[in-house]
Amino acid sequence: MVPVTVHVLDTSTTDIGKQTLGVNDGWGSFTTGTTGGANADPSNIHIVTKRSELIQALGGDNSKNAANATPKIIYVKGTIDMNVDEQDQPVGKEYYQDPAYDFEAYLAAYDPAVWGRDSVPTGSLETARAASEKNQGKNIQIHIGSNTTLVGLPGSNAKILGGNLMIQNVDNVIIRNIQFENTFDYFPQWDPTDGSTGNWNAAFDSITVKGATHIWIDHNTFTDGGHRDRNLEYFGKHYEQYDGFMDITNASDLITVSYNFFHDHDKTTLVGGSDSYTADAGKERITFHHNYYKNVTQRAPRVRYGQVHLYNNLYEASQNHEQYPYLYSIGVGHESKIYSQNNYFALAEGTPATSIVQVWGGTQFTDEGSVVNGQEVNLAEAHGTLSPVNWTPTLYTSMDSAADVPSIVQAQAGAGKLQSGKQTGSKSTK
Image (tube, rainbow, N blue to C red; front, top):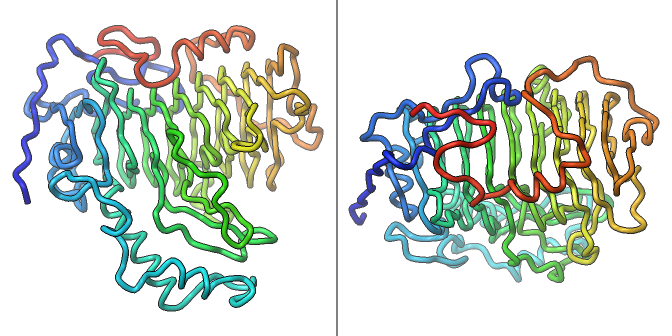
């Protein structure tokens, strides 16, 4: 393995990495708050420019870095491509592919006309596909330990390309000011039992939060980067190589998601992965505020179990129905308790306000102050089948009127909008 040099960063004039989540700034500020690596020793403050340096800064071994709880601040500078080898040289599908995997043979074996539609694929070709996908995951899934701040260096156009940050079974993590682009799966699975006609399913998110607490995800941009091919189909279904932008599952808790820009994508954010995962009950307490959802098809977010506060978010429904046809924004799933306040929805002409909220087994939803195309609308009343939630949000310092949300969010959400020094919704430990 080539030796890795991790650059130590002088933060005397750059304090963005030392900022912590402000008091009362959403569920992530509850109890102990979220400070990330703000208390890092100078020897654990780094700037990284490639995958190998990032892994080294996180602890040195990607398979073990989740257990590294040493406070650390890591600044991402420029673009870090995760589809690279140990020498940081770009790799493609062949690098991960199991020798027994053959895509044409896979299509022939699991064609519904041959395999049927009553069971998921099994056998040697499916085993080889799964092994190939696992090989890719080992490379692009980057494990983050507790007490970590990962932040884009201001002015460097920080980007993680093709990567999946894994925030799993850890506490106290901050992710800010990074563009996440083109997180895709070379080896999606065909599932004929998914829906009435089957679907292709991909494995990787840009950020995966599982069993984690005290997380702040702020001022990031999430995009496919124009790489998606919506016209590629097999078995009459879109060949889906993209999963969620950011999924939060497995009893994760106390999280604030703020000032992010999610655009041009299908499945955006899932909160709670399964109706049967009862460990989520009493968990999945998450605040989403001042996020910008533009041309996203669904899941902004879709919630199971979670006690979720949505406020001052901007939703621009797709004008491009062929590429990203709008289905809904807020999904009310099993035992969810969503409180929506002062959100703004800009829907395409002819799209009814009743499409904004979709229900999958949930019974509670409260909405206040929503504006749809300039008109005040109560989304709960418009839906007509939901009862108010049994809690009232208190973890916010101020709330903008829905009418002001478009100008505020468009100006402030996304990567590249943060500067060193002062920042609304944060405090500095400098």
